[in-house]
Image (cartoon, one colour):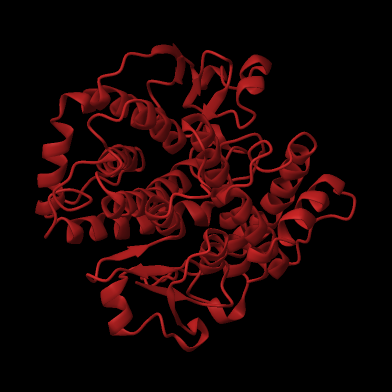
Length: 209
Length: 209
């Protein structure tokens, strides 16, 4: 099994933390996205979406996307479950994780990709080129303000993303908050509940990757 | 158990089809989104995101979001699995389903919500208001062109979204294609592979809802 990674990008970091929490060893192939190593014909044949992370199995099957990879790894290594310990908890983790993807990662990506000069016609990842929309960068920043405020409110009465259970949704939220710093949206100083949660989660050994 | 539905909206239709495929009976509560029945304080207390679908369990626990609800229903009704029959297939279904969400539904929603006069400050669903961005409506249409072309290419060599296995990803793709018609993006006439797949899937009794 091979894990195609990029040590500077947010999405593969979510998988790295997941792998560390699960205490699994997987051979890693580092791709330099700045040098376009995800745009080669060899990589395109593995992942037509040209994205990392990617998991390549022994028989050549390739699994793209963070959530698909994490679910697969959980299925084959069920100890220490990070997707919920029963059906209800599993559903709440899925809902929390999706909310972070849609309200957090997408917002940060909108802000970052529609603003960064080096990504002029690459406002979205993947095989198709799209021009930047400056208004969308601004909206991404507004959405991040709301995302952080919603999290602060959530952590007033919850230890983790789902009640008192550390899950894959906490991994996603941590990486998303670190990604938001790229567009100068740190956690506001007075968000004491969010700071408390961030301090706890970022102190886990798995999250130092 | 109660299922909060809206018979005219795309997201709850995905759950309706899933329920029909599983042959489950669930009490349904119809909300009229045009009349703002998802904005009442009673519904807000059940779902702060103000979205349908929502599943309410006997003990009052509420599960929002299509994928979370479908996974929960699959966990408690595992016969006729729609999320994959083994870990690899499960991962490929998850990846396909996510791609439809990000490249299909998000694109159609961008096109629809940033253009429709009645949604002037409601360019995104949820509790926060965002102004429309006309350029984003245009980009949504471009993205739908690419989405449909990618599907046509996929169905050249696949019977369903994942190989020859009908899954929740096919339900998502069907509803997404019907949603794209709202912004006048039907399947192009010469996409014979996509038409073949669409004909097969839309003929299933479950999909008549």
